Image 1: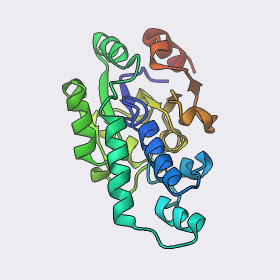
Image 2: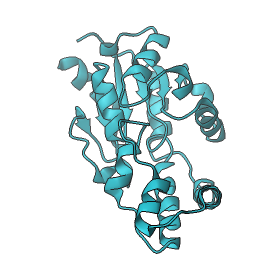
Image 3: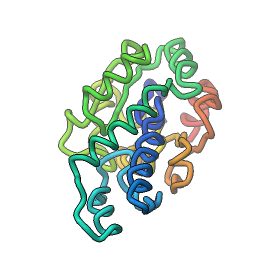
Length: 223
């Protein structure tokens, strides 16, 4: 294996937990209609557009067996979501890993299936935007995760090969995309994705707080 020269991070659910508030907001909408939104239904769209055609409004109509006010629901869901999201800080260990990576002169990127304004907005709000050498988002590729295009674009922008980077991901779609890109993947799930199948990852950690970067690089290069 060539030496590791860069790290690529997902955003949603990995740097900041936007996924739990999103699911909780939709759960509240469903509860308002007297029905439930199972995690297994929601799981297919976590971490990217994926290969799922699940639409929460379509499914809600199926459950209540009548037309719904889609515009009103989106407005209410947005209200629930923002209320939960505004209090979200970067997840534990994020800044420590970035500090260690910069101390080791590693290149840093974000590869997210979300739009650029969403990604940049959160990174700026968290005060860590300038710490990344490149940002790749849904606006930069034709297909998002689980397609490998985002990770390949990030590696290209870092002037690195897939074998020279480690990817940190929290979702099955993200893990699959990184593996399809030929990269070493560390799964770091959040409370929602911890319940999903992340077995395709090369390594599983409870939190970014558990990352010992120097030791991780030794493990990867020894493979």
